[in-house]
Length: 105
Image 1 (cartoon, one colour):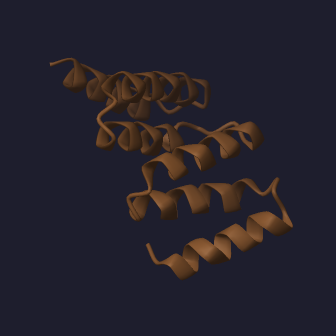
Image 2: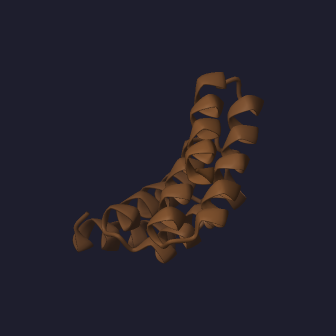
């Protein structure tokens, strides 16, 4: 979204690099600003700190799709399926399976 929001989140992370919520928020803001590579970096940092229930993998897949990397998008959805199933979210897993099928067309 706005650069000031990104800068605030970066400052928050600088104070506490192990803040998963700050990492997720920054990844999301970078995604909204179409800074997909930077968003993926923050998603990976977030995943080092937190066992996500699946949603962050959607954002990662969207980043890769918008960068033209279909294979990495499918890998992200596959990881999201694993996470969603692990956390009892079958509808999210099904959504990701459908997204992979769509990318395979």
